[in-house]
Image 1: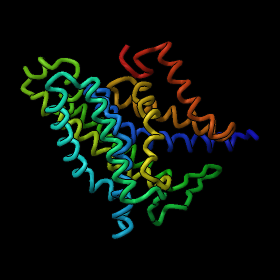
Image 2: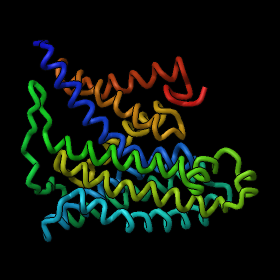
Image 3: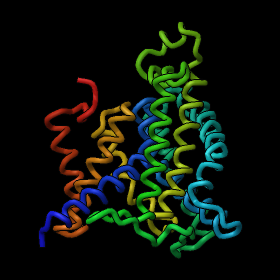
Length: 291
């Protein structure tokens, strides 16, 4: 039954869910939108981050968000190493379009199989004092398992936006797919720029994975649920626009939450992708892309 209070809570839940979606889509917005690298394995790195958070939380009791932050440098190193392999194997020879896609597709399955062999297919979860508690502000409910990831997601997205807009390397990342020659004339090495960019993208996956396992239990194949959704968010937000990706994620989160609340969760993904198709028909560059 429709009530204003129920609608308000659905919107609040959607804002928190959308913020989390933004954290998951952030790295793909960099690789797909800025580098033209179709890293279909990105959600699998998110799940890898979830299992890292699970292992450390299980053995040492650290807060999952703290674990995600602490492991970002390690994931950054993984990302930079991954670009070296990708460049040497595909980009240097001009085979990145199809062979590169197959590379990331294979990488996705390798990581997933390793996780299954190591942890099985059982769902894993983490423990924290705030999980299971809810903040009540009048008629509004803010479950901490959603609120904490939403706040962390907003912080990391804001930090990346500031880095991109205020630093030389950040501006170089924004420019690397637009004018490589001009970038070289400015004294930047495009290969180094791309290496750093992919490192940042994979580093954000570590934190996104820690946030995911706070929100819900995970198992190795959960990442598949997010592949289509995060690609839709990146395209909807406008290729190469991180702030657009964030706003698109919020839009999808709110729509999914409202539809789930009043019509059932099975309709939510269909409506989200319906918005994407309608947007591409009217504005192919995405809602927040350049005109």
